[in-house]
Image (cartoon, rainbow, N blue to C red):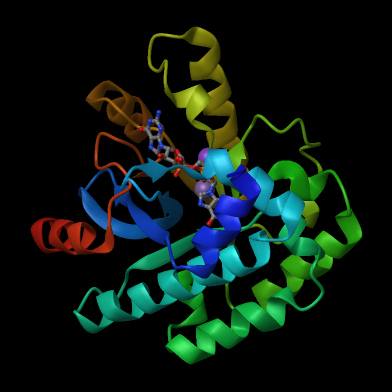
Length: 254
Ligand code: G
Ligand code: G
Ligand code: MN
Ligand code: NA
Protein backbone atom coordinates (compact mmCIF):
# COMPACT_ATOMS: atom_id res chain seq x y z
CA UNK A 1 0.00 0.00 0.00
CA UNK A 2 1.27 3.45 -0.69
CA UNK A 3 2.56 5.41 2.26
CA UNK A 4 -0.25 7.98 2.24
CA UNK A 5 -2.95 5.32 2.53
CA UNK A 6 -1.01 3.45 5.18
CA UNK A 7 -0.62 6.68 7.15
CA UNK A 8 -4.34 7.49 6.91
CA UNK A 9 -5.11 3.95 8.07
CA UNK A 10 -2.62 4.33 10.94
CA UNK A 11 -4.23 7.58 12.09
CA UNK A 12 -7.73 6.09 11.96
CA UNK A 13 -6.70 2.91 13.75
CA UNK A 14 -4.72 4.60 16.50
CA UNK A 15 -1.32 3.33 15.43
CA UNK A 16 0.39 6.56 16.38
CA UNK A 17 1.93 7.10 19.76
CA UNK A 18 3.92 9.82 21.48
CA UNK A 19 7.42 9.42 22.89
CA UNK A 20 8.97 11.90 25.29
CA UNK A 21 12.54 13.15 25.54
CA UNK A 22 13.70 14.93 28.70
CA UNK A 23 15.04 18.46 28.84
CA UNK A 24 17.58 18.47 31.62
CA UNK A 25 19.09 21.12 33.87
CA UNK A 26 22.67 20.06 33.14
CA UNK A 27 23.90 21.61 36.36
CA UNK A 28 21.59 19.77 38.77
CA UNK A 29 20.84 16.92 36.31
CA UNK A 30 17.16 17.27 37.03
CA UNK A 31 14.49 16.84 34.38
CA UNK A 32 12.72 20.16 33.88
CA UNK A 33 10.62 19.28 30.88
CA UNK A 34 9.71 16.90 28.10
CA UNK A 35 9.46 17.23 24.34
CA UNK A 36 6.65 15.23 22.77
CA UNK A 37 7.77 13.40 19.61
CA UNK A 38 5.28 11.44 17.53
CA UNK A 39 5.94 7.84 16.43
CA UNK A 40 4.12 5.46 14.12
CA UNK A 41 3.96 1.85 15.22
CA UNK A 42 3.88 -0.22 12.03
CA UNK A 43 1.93 -3.48 11.78
CA UNK A 44 5.10 -5.51 12.34
CA UNK A 45 5.78 -3.51 15.53
CA UNK A 46 8.63 -1.48 14.05
CA UNK A 47 8.71 2.22 14.78
CA UNK A 48 8.56 4.76 11.96
CA UNK A 49 9.95 8.20 12.79
CA UNK A 50 8.29 11.51 12.00
CA UNK A 51 10.88 12.46 9.35
CA UNK A 52 9.33 9.69 7.23
CA UNK A 53 5.70 10.76 7.55
CA UNK A 54 5.34 14.38 8.71
CA UNK A 55 6.05 15.71 5.18
CA UNK A 56 3.32 13.44 3.74
CA UNK A 57 1.02 14.40 6.60
CA UNK A 58 1.53 18.06 5.72
CA UNK A 59 0.83 17.51 2.03
CA UNK A 60 -2.35 15.52 2.66
CA UNK A 61 -3.83 17.47 5.56
CA UNK A 62 -3.34 14.51 7.89
CA UNK A 63 -1.09 16.81 9.91
CA UNK A 64 -4.25 18.29 11.46
CA UNK A 65 -5.58 15.12 13.17
CA UNK A 66 -2.02 13.95 13.92
CA UNK A 67 -1.12 17.21 15.66
CA UNK A 68 -4.33 17.25 17.60
CA UNK A 69 -3.59 13.71 18.77
CA UNK A 70 -0.02 14.63 19.78
CA UNK A 71 -1.05 17.79 21.61
CA UNK A 72 -3.91 16.07 23.46
CA UNK A 73 -1.71 13.09 24.39
CA UNK A 74 1.09 15.37 25.59
CA UNK A 75 -1.20 17.60 27.66
CA UNK A 76 -2.96 14.58 29.21
CA UNK A 77 0.41 13.07 30.04
CA UNK A 78 1.62 16.32 31.58
CA UNK A 79 -1.50 16.40 33.76
CA UNK A 80 -0.65 12.87 34.95
CA UNK A 81 2.95 13.84 35.77
CA UNK A 82 1.78 16.98 37.58
CA UNK A 83 -0.65 14.86 39.60
CA UNK A 84 2.21 12.50 40.52
CA UNK A 85 3.95 15.48 42.11
CA UNK A 86 6.23 16.64 39.28
CA UNK A 87 4.55 20.02 39.41
CA UNK A 88 7.23 22.07 37.68
CA UNK A 89 7.51 19.86 34.62
CA UNK A 90 6.99 21.60 31.26
CA UNK A 91 5.78 20.05 28.02
CA UNK A 92 6.99 21.04 24.56
CA UNK A 93 5.09 20.16 21.38
CA UNK A 94 6.27 20.71 17.79
CA UNK A 95 4.15 22.63 15.32
CA UNK A 96 4.85 22.69 11.61
CA UNK A 97 4.50 25.78 9.44
CA UNK A 98 1.56 24.23 7.59
CA UNK A 99 -0.45 24.04 10.80
CA UNK A 100 -0.09 27.74 11.47
CA UNK A 101 -2.19 28.40 8.39
CA UNK A 102 -5.22 27.03 10.20
CA UNK A 103 -7.14 30.08 11.48
CA UNK A 104 -8.58 28.41 14.56
CA UNK A 105 -5.34 26.82 15.74
CA UNK A 106 -5.19 28.99 18.86
CA UNK A 107 -8.75 28.01 19.79
CA UNK A 108 -7.93 24.33 19.23
CA UNK A 109 -4.86 24.54 21.41
CA UNK A 110 -6.74 26.33 24.19
CA UNK A 111 -9.58 23.80 24.04
CA UNK A 112 -7.06 21.02 24.74
CA UNK A 113 -5.31 23.02 27.47
CA UNK A 114 -8.65 23.61 29.19
CA UNK A 115 -9.91 20.07 28.69
CA UNK A 116 -6.78 18.58 30.27
CA UNK A 117 -6.55 21.23 32.97
CA UNK A 118 -2.82 21.90 32.55
CA UNK A 119 -1.51 25.39 33.27
CA UNK A 120 -0.88 27.14 29.93
CA UNK A 121 2.39 28.41 31.43
CA UNK A 122 3.73 24.83 31.39
CA UNK A 123 3.11 24.32 27.68
CA UNK A 124 5.69 25.33 25.10
CA UNK A 125 5.24 25.26 21.34
CA UNK A 126 8.32 24.62 19.19
CA UNK A 127 8.35 26.35 15.82
CA UNK A 128 11.15 26.39 13.26
CA UNK A 129 12.67 29.53 11.75
CA UNK A 130 10.24 29.04 8.88
CA UNK A 131 7.89 31.29 10.85
CA UNK A 132 10.25 34.19 10.18
CA UNK A 133 10.40 33.51 6.46
CA UNK A 134 6.89 33.18 5.09
CA UNK A 135 3.42 34.40 6.08
CA UNK A 136 5.16 36.61 8.59
CA UNK A 137 2.07 38.65 9.44
CA UNK A 138 -0.19 35.70 10.21
CA UNK A 139 2.60 33.92 12.07
CA UNK A 140 3.19 37.05 14.15
CA UNK A 141 -0.50 37.17 15.01
CA UNK A 142 -0.41 33.52 16.02
CA UNK A 143 2.63 34.01 18.22
CA UNK A 144 1.16 37.00 20.02
CA UNK A 145 -2.14 35.17 20.53
CA UNK A 146 -0.52 32.16 22.20
CA UNK A 147 1.81 34.33 24.29
CA UNK A 148 -1.18 36.34 25.54
CA UNK A 149 -2.60 33.06 26.81
CA UNK A 150 0.58 32.26 28.69
CA UNK A 151 1.99 29.56 26.41
CA UNK A 152 5.75 29.64 25.71
CA UNK A 153 7.28 29.73 22.22
CA UNK A 154 10.63 28.17 21.34
CA UNK A 155 12.44 28.38 18.03
CA UNK A 156 13.51 24.84 17.15
CA UNK A 157 16.64 23.90 15.16
CA UNK A 158 17.86 27.45 15.67
CA UNK A 159 20.73 28.62 13.47
CA UNK A 160 20.17 26.57 10.33
CA UNK A 161 17.14 28.37 8.96
CA UNK A 162 18.81 31.40 7.38
CA UNK A 163 16.30 33.73 8.96
CA UNK A 164 17.13 37.35 9.54
CA UNK A 165 18.20 37.70 13.16
CA UNK A 166 16.56 41.10 13.36
CA UNK A 167 13.20 39.39 13.28
CA UNK A 168 13.86 37.92 16.69
CA UNK A 169 13.44 41.36 18.21
CA UNK A 170 9.91 41.63 16.89
CA UNK A 171 8.61 38.17 17.77
CA UNK A 172 7.47 37.17 21.25
CA UNK A 173 9.85 34.22 21.39
CA UNK A 174 10.67 32.81 24.84
CA UNK A 175 13.52 30.39 23.99
CA UNK A 176 15.98 29.28 21.30
CA UNK A 177 16.91 25.64 20.78
CA UNK A 178 20.46 25.44 19.42
CA UNK A 179 20.38 23.03 16.50
CA UNK A 180 22.17 19.79 17.17
CA UNK A 181 24.43 20.22 14.13
CA UNK A 182 26.29 22.95 16.10
CA UNK A 183 26.50 20.83 19.23
CA UNK A 184 27.64 17.52 17.77
CA UNK A 185 31.28 18.47 17.15
CA UNK A 186 31.77 20.52 20.32
CA UNK A 187 34.11 21.27 21.89
CA UNK A 188 36.75 20.49 19.20
CA UNK A 189 35.29 22.20 16.15
CA UNK A 190 36.31 25.86 16.31
CA UNK A 191 33.59 27.11 13.97
CA UNK A 192 30.85 25.30 15.85
CA UNK A 193 32.22 26.59 19.15
CA UNK A 194 32.07 30.15 17.79
CA UNK A 195 28.56 29.71 16.40
CA UNK A 196 27.30 28.18 19.61
CA UNK A 197 28.80 31.02 21.63
CA UNK A 198 27.13 33.49 19.28
CA UNK A 199 23.70 31.92 19.75
CA UNK A 200 24.22 31.87 23.52
CA UNK A 201 25.14 35.58 23.46
CA UNK A 202 22.10 36.32 21.33
CA UNK A 203 19.73 34.59 23.73
CA UNK A 204 21.35 36.35 26.68
CA UNK A 205 21.12 39.78 25.10
CA UNK A 206 17.46 39.21 24.19
CA UNK A 207 16.88 37.80 27.67
CA UNK A 208 15.25 34.62 26.43
CA UNK A 209 15.74 30.95 27.31
CA UNK A 210 18.16 28.55 25.68
CA UNK A 211 18.22 24.81 25.12
CA UNK A 212 21.10 22.87 23.56
CA UNK A 213 19.88 20.00 21.40
CA UNK A 214 21.69 16.78 20.62
CA UNK A 215 23.87 16.66 23.73
CA UNK A 216 25.71 13.34 23.60
CA UNK A 217 28.92 13.75 25.64
CA UNK A 218 30.09 15.09 29.00
CA UNK A 219 32.60 17.30 27.14
CA UNK A 220 29.68 19.01 25.45
CA UNK A 221 27.94 19.49 28.81
CA UNK A 222 31.09 21.09 30.23
CA UNK A 223 31.47 23.41 27.24
CA UNK A 224 27.83 24.49 27.46
CA UNK A 225 27.74 24.94 31.25
CA UNK A 226 30.96 27.00 31.10
CA UNK A 227 29.08 29.38 28.80
CA UNK A 228 25.89 29.52 30.88
CA UNK A 229 23.82 27.30 28.63
CA UNK A 230 22.14 25.26 31.37
CA UNK A 231 19.36 23.31 29.69
CA UNK A 232 20.23 20.39 27.43
CA UNK A 233 18.44 17.69 25.55
CA UNK A 234 20.08 14.67 23.98
CA UNK A 235 20.98 11.02 24.00
CA UNK A 236 23.44 11.55 26.88
CA UNK A 237 20.44 12.00 29.16
CA UNK A 238 17.89 9.90 27.30
CA UNK A 239 16.55 9.05 23.89
CA UNK A 240 12.88 9.79 23.27
CA UNK A 241 11.05 7.09 25.27
CA UNK A 242 7.48 5.94 25.98
CA UNK A 243 5.59 7.70 28.78
CA UNK A 244 5.90 4.87 31.31
CA UNK A 245 9.68 4.79 30.91
CA UNK A 246 9.76 8.56 31.29
CA UNK A 247 7.84 8.23 34.57
CA UNK A 248 10.57 5.88 35.83
CA UNK A 249 13.24 8.44 34.83
CA UNK A 250 11.36 11.15 36.73
CA UNK A 251 11.29 8.94 39.82
CA UNK A 252 15.03 8.30 39.52
CA UNK A 253 16.15 11.86 38.94
CA UNK A 254 14.04 13.97 41.29
O1 G B 1 11.71 12.35 17.05
P1 G B 1 12.69 12.69 15.98
O2 G B 1 13.97 13.29 16.48
O3 G B 1 12.93 11.57 15.00
O4 G B 1 11.94 13.85 15.17
C1 G B 1 12.32 14.20 13.90
C2 G B 1 11.63 15.49 13.49
O5 G B 1 10.21 15.35 13.51
C3 G B 1 11.97 16.63 14.41
O6 G B 1 12.34 17.74 13.61
C4 G B 1 10.70 16.93 15.12
O7 G B 1 10.57 18.31 15.36
C5 G B 1 9.63 16.43 14.16
N1 G B 1 8.44 16.03 14.93
C6 G B 1 8.38 15.09 15.89
N2 G B 1 7.11 15.01 16.41
C7 G B 1 6.39 15.94 15.74
C8 G B 1 5.03 16.37 15.82
O8 G B 1 4.22 15.89 16.62
N3 G B 1 4.64 17.36 14.96
C9 G B 1 5.50 17.94 14.08
N4 G B 1 5.03 18.90 13.29
N5 G B 1 6.79 17.57 13.97
C10 G B 1 7.23 16.59 14.81
O1 G C 1 13.97 18.84 15.47
P1 G C 1 13.53 18.43 16.83
O2 G C 1 14.41 18.96 17.90
O3 G C 1 12.11 18.66 17.12
O4 G C 1 13.69 16.86 16.87
C1 G C 1 14.22 16.16 17.88
C2 G C 1 14.90 15.03 17.15
O5 G C 1 16.27 14.96 17.54
C3 G C 1 14.26 13.69 17.51
O6 G C 1 14.10 12.96 16.34
C4 G C 1 15.32 13.03 18.37
O7 G C 1 15.32 11.62 18.19
C5 G C 1 16.61 13.65 17.88
N1 G C 1 17.62 13.71 18.90
C6 G C 1 17.41 14.02 20.19
N2 G C 1 18.56 13.98 20.89
C7 G C 1 19.53 13.61 20.02
C8 G C 1 20.93 13.39 20.16
O8 G C 1 21.53 13.51 21.22
N3 G C 1 21.59 13.04 19.03
C9 G C 1 20.98 12.88 17.84
N4 G C 1 21.72 12.52 16.80
N5 G C 1 19.65 13.08 17.67
C10 G C 1 18.92 13.44 18.74
MN1 MN D 1 11.57 20.07 18.49
NA1 NA E 1 15.57 20.26 16.46
